[in-house]
Image (cartoon, rainbow, N blue to C red; front, side):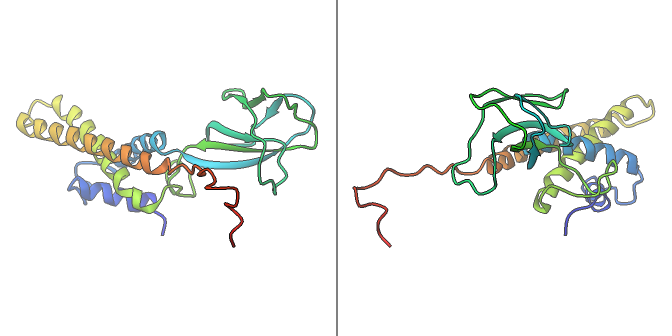
Amino acid sequence: MATTLTALRARVARTLADAANLAWSTDDLDEGIRKALFDYTLAVPLLQTADIPITQDGRQVDISSITNIIQVVDVWLPYGGDETDPRHQPFRHWVQLNILFVAGAYVPRAGDTARVFYQAYHTLDGLDGATQTTFPDPHAGAIALGAAAYCAASRAVDLTEQVTVDREAVERLQTWARRAMLDFQDRLKVLAGHAGGVPHVPLPPLDRHDGEWA
C-alpha cells in the first residue's frame, strides 16, 4: 500500500518521540515532510513519459500539457510506438516557456508524435492537494528521517529565542538534527545510485557465427 501523508506524519512523529504532537504540530510535520520530499526529488527524480502530438511544422514544440516537470531528459521523434531503434533528437528545453526546441537535422512536422522523457517532482497523497504517492514505499523511511531532521532543526531555532529553556537540551536537539540530516543525505546518495541503474553495454561478437545459436 502506498504511503499517505497521515502515515508519514505518524512515522515522523515517532522518529521525534512525539507521537502525541506535543512539541510539533501537524503543520510543523508537514513542512518538514515537504522539505524532505523536495530533497528526495532532487536526488531521485520521478521519470515520466508523455506522447506529444505535433500540430504544426517547426522546431518549437509546445509541452505545456506536461505538468509537474523538472526537465526533459530525452526526446524520440518521430515516434510511432513500435520502433526498435527510436530516433533520439538533440533538443533544448525552455522550462519557463514550456517549449521544447528540436535542434537536430529533422524538423518536426504536423501529424508527428514526440515521445518525451522527463523528470518530475514526487508527490505524496494528501500533501498540498496531491492524490497520488509516487515514491516507492521502502523509501518512506528515508523521507521520514529527513523530515524529522528538518523539524528538529526548526524547533531548535525556536527554542534558542526562549530565555527559560535549558540550553543543554537545545544543544542536544541541534546535535541530533545535524546527525539525522547527515544520515538522510547519506541515504539519498545511496538511493540516487540505485536509481541510476546499471548500464547495458553489448559485448562484441566472439566470431562470425555469434548470434546464430538457437
